[in-house]
Amino acid sequence: MAYNDPAEGFDAPKGDSKEIAIPVKKVDLTEVDHYIDGDGPEPTEQELDTLRRIPDRIPWICFTIAFVELCERFAYYGTTIVLTNFVQQPLPVGSTTGNDPRSDGQPGALGKGQRASQGMVLFNKMWSYFAPLFGGYLADTKWGKMRTIQYSIALAMFGHIILIISALPPVIKNPDGAMGCLAVGLVVFGAGVGGFKPNISPLMVEQLKYSKMRVVERQGEKIILDPALTTQRIFMYFYLCINIGSIVGQVTMVYAERYVGFWLSYTLPTIMFCFCPLVLGVFHKRYTHYPPTESVLGNAVKLIKFACKGKISWNPRRTVRNLGAPAFWNDVKPSNVANKPKWMTFDDAWVEQVSRGTKACLVFAYYPLFWLAYNQIDGNLTSQAATLELNGVPNDLINNLNPLGIVIMIPILDLGVYPLLRFLKIRFSPLRRMAAGFFIATCAMIWAAVVQHFIYTKGACGKYMNTCPTPAPINVWVQAGAYVLVGLSEIMASITGLEYSYTKAPANMRGLVFGFYHFTSAVSAALGQAFVSVSEDPLLVWNYTIVAIIAFCGGVVFWLTFRGLDKKEEQMNMIKESEYRGRAREIHDAKVIDDEMRA
Image 1: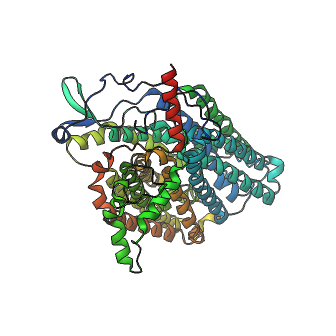
Image 2: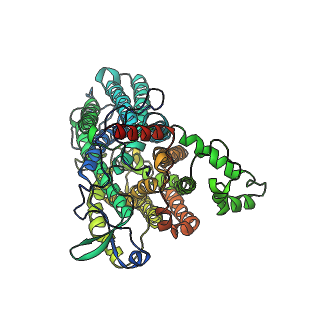
Image 3: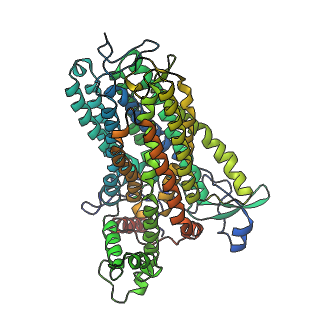
């Protein structure tokens, strides 16, 4: 029985598993209830070469989880979009809430300056994406995905409440106290995000019924239903939901801060966040989810240490060659080990899956260089907008062009561009999409640098426009190109990163691999702290230029490093499923068999 068979009616014995003891809808794998084409055989080698491949249909239950993500991202981005103005800009004259409804007004509260605001934005991003390492670990080994998500929602809700307190009129009268309250709120809020993010998207994809290619006949044509394309599609629409939540949350909150105050900008996301536990509770019994595996992570670490024995040398070149050799993993497959350690209770297929997951983590090691460019839209580009002619548009509204562009481009790519590429036999693999994301992000930063150059040359205050009372005579919508290009780079790199995490991770370690993927964003935020010193006048042109160079070099090195791995993409996707599940899953399987025998 493959690991991705649905968990059925699991009620773990006390002390053996930490998963919530909730009955799950029983699924008969011989029935097909959401594919009109039914089951089909796996394709032959000839069929793989000749038949057209398309994605499978997505079950409706997946979209309930996507809606939960939409609500969470509404809350996250609605909260963080106003963070720059809340910290950087001073409290407007005559305002007690930070609002400034004038057409050329600038909402603000604490007046700590751009360096402090950029530092706070980066800290929030760093912590929110460092915490997923722990969230993924807890889901895989202790609580299971559903329980981890539930606890994380409760924690994030508490953080939202603290943020509301930091923005109350009596509190913002004391900027230092409000700053401290804000910091505490962000820490608690980020911890909740960390438990939610690495588990919600794999939970959604685990609702898919098929993990192997199938040949079916549709309208008289034999085609291959490819699970890799299905996974690609489901993550694209998952990301679409993320950005719908982002647009609505950000647009609503920037007007809330302008016309009412920051307390409302933190309250509305909290209200929207309440839909997350509500939806998960209503559909809980319809979800397929798994118990935690407990011992799997420890065995993976032991396996890697065992494989490294005798492979590490004082000669770096020899070490790299040894670690990259096929024998590195082949030698530690149980079938090739004469005297097996007691912990080696898994099969050869699981070693191949760990090998594949390790390669995925190495791919993600380059992602901080991509996120460094992406992070500019949350702080520096928002501040750049404040130095341009706004004509009544809030400066932190413009960056909604980023999610808006994503929402428009995803259906175009999914329904038009990608099918056309497949028809033309042009292979636009995950690693190629990732590399394209780096280069598109480079173009976005070049655009931002050029805009900043003209701000300095045309502005009344030259290279000190952030403190200038008069904006540069340039319309703020000139920033549109940078935001749209960043959005396209996200579709190429960020969505594909989620897809790669799911398809390459061992089925019983997906939470941890997703956590590592999100952790790369935290590393990027930490690297971004080094750029805080150039995130102010008169050095902003250099800021964008350096980030562009880093993204470009990262893309070049990324492709040169992994172009060989790109050729093995399909081979890695077709690795046999392992029978190894971990102790808690084995307890679950034994209970299912026992219940069936009694029935």
